[in-house]
Image (cartoon, rainbow, N blue to C red; front, side, top):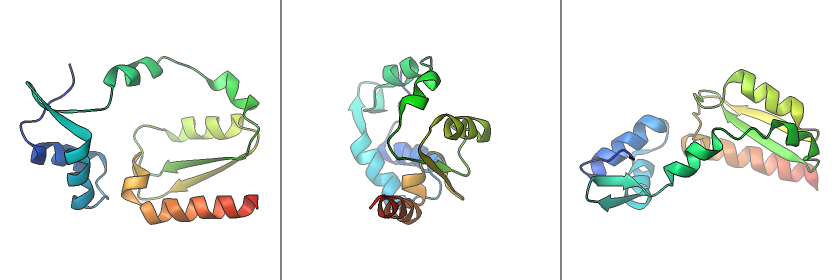
Length: 128
């Protein structure tokens, strides 16, 4: 069963542990809009079953077929994507630009939105 929290504040505290560099306002927003009240308490709206299903899916052999320009951003403090996994991904994609956003976790768009926006802008500008 999904984790549940007794209040929106406790759900926001969970979000703060996941994306510690994000602001308290972001944590609250995620708790208010990303959780739903159930009989068990506040649970994520995200389908945990989907997450479990993709953990067993290995698409690495397909990556060389992705020939379009691809930007891979990784949070330097990510506990989800290891350095080894990141290098493997970069090596398998033929037309890739990889960047690490230092100080960010796996939720780098929440932790460092300006750095992510700058990386996206630079990537798109190079494509023109």
